[in-house]
Each structure stands twice: as structure tokens, then as C-alpha cells.
Length: 262
Image (cartoon, rainbow, N blue to C red; front, side, top):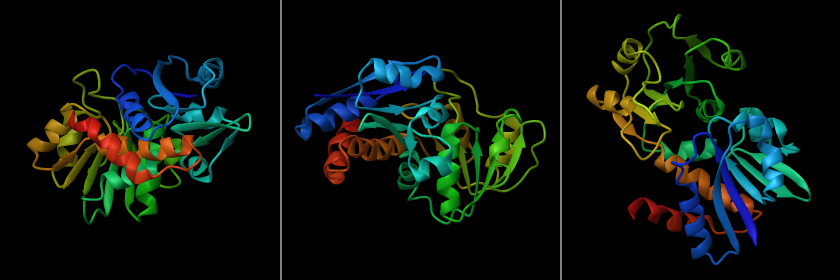
């Protein structure tokens, strides 16, 4: 039997075990999937090995650790600079990123997006920025501090909260955990007001709750979407990677999607 897990901090909220175990049961696979609270990202691979896992998903805040500590990584994961999926193959741990294609599928109904701003500069922001730029979208990054912006500066305009310059955007994305376990916004309210003023769409990677970010976007008449579909699509791709891309992804999606309607 294969064993899989999702690592993160926090992790108790994660619906990933329900998604994966539902598909595993429906497809008649011999496997189980659980969640693991991991405080120290540098211990990710040690924990993976000690639990004798065959594969894992990695969520906030450990996606960059996942890439950097793996034995091998896909070209896309390397280009993005983070990984959300680990797979054990031939005694090596391989890192992949299914967030980027999952995000693009999730926002397919947001039409004519030419300019976007990503709030946050962590591993999820890496994937979203890569995905948008691959589609020809002009991307800006806004982060609380300057220290994490360096990696984006060759590809994007970057701002910290204290030097933000007002601009117009079609799409606003929260890639941070603000609002997940609190009522915080991912940026100061006055900055968000100026960003939302001319925007059309807002996307929050957080799923399963109405975050302050999405509530404020609605109040400013934006079309909004949470991270449920991104979670779904990246999970479909991840489960197929766990089984060496031998599964029918349409069957995985149908099975997992039922979780959101239970």
C-alpha cells in the first residue's frame, strides 16, 4: 500500500486528505493519504523519509523548502522556484509544481486579463507569477517587506508596502495566508482600496471561507473566486504524479469534485 501526506503549517484545515482519499477509493487504488503539521521546513525531507511516504503535497509555508531539498526537480518547478508535490521514485525524491497549471484552470473564466498584481512573495506567488507570465500577463508583486522581492525583480515590477505606487490592474491575487486563521488583510486597507478601484477580478488562494480580502473585493464590485478550484486541479495532477501519470485525470476530477458538494 502506498502512503501519501500533505505538509504545512497550519494544516488542520486542509481538505486535501478528503480529496485524495475519495479519489483513491473511487478508483480502487491501494493507498491512503493523511496530513502532517510541520513547523520547521528544513525537516521536510527527513520527515518524509521517517514516515516512509511514497509521495506528498506541500503547502504554506514550505514550498521553497520542497524544491531546494528534493533530489531532483522538474524544469517547471525549477523555473517557478517552488514545489508543491514530492514523489519517491527509484530511491530519489522528485519535486514538481502543480500549482501553476491548477491556478490557470481555476481562473479560466476571468477574461481579458492583461495586468495582475500578486499580494505576497512566497512559494505560491512564485507559481502564480510564472503561470500568468506564461500567458503574457504583465505581473506586479506587492509584499509587506522588501527582503523576498529580489527573486522577482528581473521579471516583474516589485513593491513593498512602504513604496507602493498606484497603478491599474485587471486581476488582484492574494497568495498569502492572511485571512486563513484570522481576519487580517494581505495588505494595508488604503493600498487595497486603490488597487480594487479599477480592477475587475479578485482571486484568493484560501478556500472554504469568505476572507476579509474577498469581502472587500466584493464591496468594490469585483468578480471574486476563492482557491477551491485551484486546490482541486492541482490535487488531480498531483495524484496522477503519485501513480506515475497512469490515471485518468477526468475520473480523478469527477471524484474529487464531489467533496465540495458533500
